Length: 105
Image 1: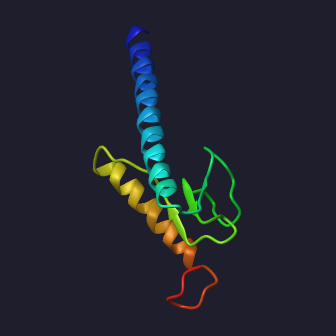
Image 2 (image 1 turned 90 degrees about the vertical axis):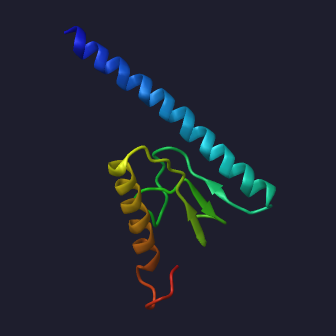
């Protein structure tokens, strides 16, 4: 039972570090947006935003008139990078739904 407990502890430590890193990255992005006087909305974790099946981290200027979406992601390995690329491709596909060809929302 001890190895299982050690694995669980290691997983929680990784989650803590991951949360710290992602929070820092999002704060950095937010600082750049504020410094450039760009209107934006930062979404909350697990928030539901109309028009998105999974809310991006930032919507510029707002979810009511999205012109830019920002996903704040870091990758550690090829598998993680592939997951993130898939997410970005999915957001790009969402931006084209119901639009004339070549004209994103």
